[in-house]
Image (cartoon, rainbow, N blue to C red; front, side, top):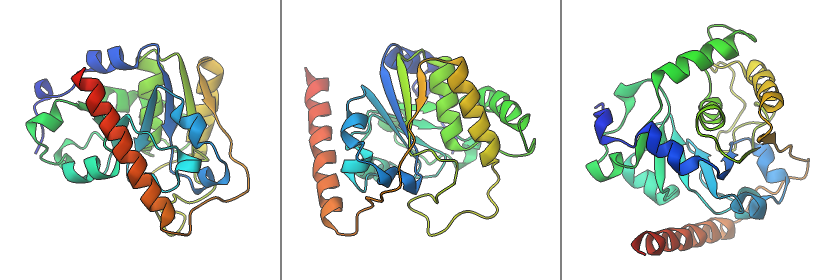
Length: 234
């Protein structure tokens, strides 16, 4: 069911929220577990997480989520349970895949403009496969950097599929994306926008192998949710 755009968070409202703020965009490459950058991530005013990229290891990924950006049909309970964001963004132009969210959830949900996707698809396509679709990560980067005037944007967990997505078992074989073209596009964007930086990750793997990290992640999400609730009541 497609939501009426008038019921959703507007572009102007999103721009007002992000303008002048430091933003961390968290990709889902397994290489994010090679460093202890969680505290650095959480120091940003806004932390954006993507698709199924919930927190497994706060030491590497941070514990804060301000915005969830998705092209996968997580239901409202899943978004709140795994991310507890202040806002959410539906990124894919496939509006028919949009879950039937409640009115309260839709008021904090931004629908990524189809025209932004079309321009991005042409930009990335010009660097490689013209039929390839932009990834959700590329859409988020494009939206924040080009349209929302943040003070700083840092990318974490983006290695353009040199390592697998941490919640998938293997590297994709037939994804409809051109990862090399997106890497070139991001490099060109970094050169054009001084606010944008991509953090490279080392070789040491910190991916958790015990349930304790899952418990810690849940506790930290609950703490952030409580703090956000108290802040909004003030």
